[in-house]
Image 1 (cartoon, helix red, strand yellow):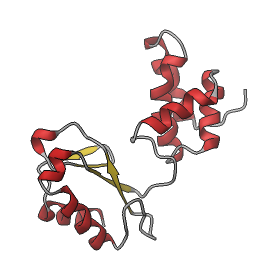
Image 2 (tube, helix red, strand yellow):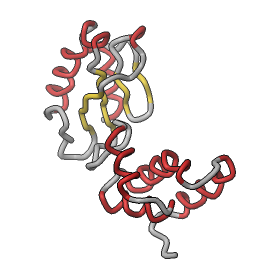
Image 3 (cartoon, one colour):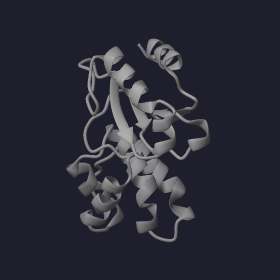
Amino acid sequence: MEKKFSNEFYGEMDRIQRFYPNKLAMLLPALHAAQRDRGWISEETMQDVADFLAIPKTRVKEVVTFYHMFHTKPVGKFNLQFCNNIACWLRGSEELIHHAEKKCGIGMGETTKDGRFTISEVECLGSCGTAPVCQINDDYHENFDQKALDKVLEEFR
């Protein structure tokens, strides 16, 4: 079989395979590994994951399009994912989003020209008690405010 992913992808799949009863059960970790490998999940990547797991591409696409953690288009090095659920909204997430758009010079769903930042909105990050929340890549920033956002943006520049 032709190698379509990096050695890291295949190494990770080899390491975790013993923890799963079959290849279909490996779909989520395979998608995470594929996204780390390629940066996002294109139609081609979906097909490659489907081929690797020997499952229909439609199964892969169902999962990719269900979860906000999988990106179906390229995103910036730092993906600012703002929760827009009621707890975050009531505690100022909308204002934070507008502040981020202004500071980055882009709108919702856009990526800066230098590929550094993407601003996106997600339905719920499950951290209502510490709202508002922004997930930047894999890290949660809770009780987030404009001052904390400015600091993070400056650190990542």
